[in-house]
Image (tube, rainbow, N blue to C red; front, side):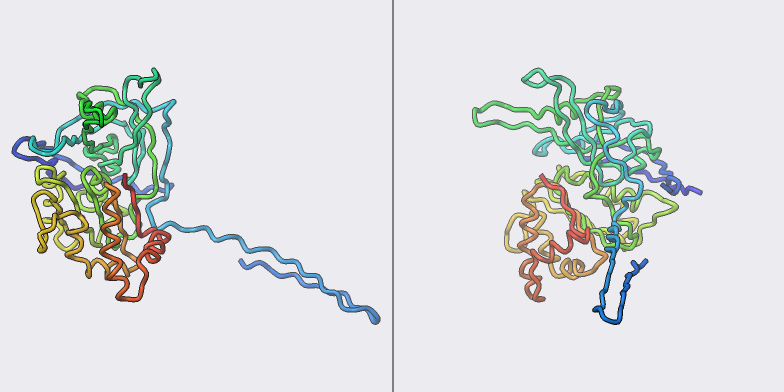
Length: 360
């Protein structure tokens, strides 16, 4: 029987913006989606030599069993030529007016027809045509909601999108086609959706795992989906009893996304959730260096290394590509103290599905 929990959840707000919703989250029902013999024979005569005839069959290759929640995962149900057409239900800015750039949280209707999992992505095909007169190509976005969706009925999907505007070498203002299309959406507008896609960022099966989440900016999206399932929902077949540790890096405090949600989780589950922000333009470490995500992690370097030596620790990284190099620099010396080559060890973690990266 499905369990239910009600949580008053507010999307991140500043003194400029706020959104409050009363969400009743219902859990989905449980989804139910020898040794080879060696033959040996010989024929012997009184005058002839012994002849042996051996037939062997290679053992069947063992199928790899994933440590992630892959069972029943659907990919590419909808493709560019035949996308699902949903509607925008909600679109709100979740960064302050003084933040360097706008980020919006948006919710689309799916009526349960786009069955995604936490950690997957969807494609969006913006309206209009490109400079060659052809329809715009899809852009992929990490999903920012749990499989139940923000309204708890498994009939919506949410995204977290930063509006892309920049000045090119010629001094011209350039607007990202899809990000501006999405950030300008009005409730009721139709949206063409493809997917879902991706298995790299799926959550681990183990409810007692340590899950370390490293996100910059809108790279927070998959981790919001993780954390809602871990802390805001009740499921018959999943109860998180491990440790979730989120590191979120942003330029300013007015850019902190979903801050109130995460602080509520920390308040309710202090033994299971740790939260660390790195605000590069406002914070410095003891050496006076800017506080990037790898700088914040360096403060816990020894503890993180000890966790990474355990076989139930999973690292997920989403956001700007540069942060992985910074994390490598932290771990190289720590691993070396134990006589371990960090880069080789990281490869082992990847093969074991314990090091998962989606950066751009």
